[in-house]
Length: 255
Image (cartoon, rainbow, N blue to C red; front, side):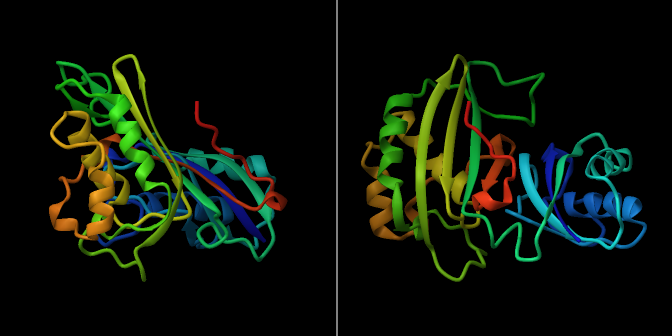
């Protein structure tokens, strides 16, 4: 049987999603918990691997098992074997053609930035911080140059293992919620550090250090070296992924 599951985690105490030797990762914790419930070793695959310090509100994974359990038992049972900073949200049986990564049509990220004089205390490591005033309207306008199918080489970090830099961004929306600024980005896929690099550029524009058209200039340059610094990991959230409607999986809705 193949299971699709939703996972939520706070990333600050993890060395990213992917299993690595001698460090704590989300994949390792989830596989351990599922294996305890299945009573056999379980390997999982995710919709989008996250880096150290990045959070997830709706990571999607799939796993193979020959154990027979009720769907709510996979959720409740696995959660009893998971630490407080990672939990299973839902479980659903899917066919053998489903793959958490390759079946995904869209992926959604949100970057949360606290824009005030003082840094966060209660939400430290849960959002990034900028003490200077930011022009959200200009940030949003600049982001519209990134829509569509384009070459994102200028927003691709060194070490990216993607075969090509072409990605299709379907929406990029920047909004202010009182002291918080939300940058919502959806695309068919993302390059290594792509969202954080885009955020770094939008911050420069929001501060007034660069013109709104800088995003267009960078895209055309295809040169990562002339772009802004990478925004911190703690502000980034993997919000969810969309799949073909026949799977009837929960979808993330931007609020």
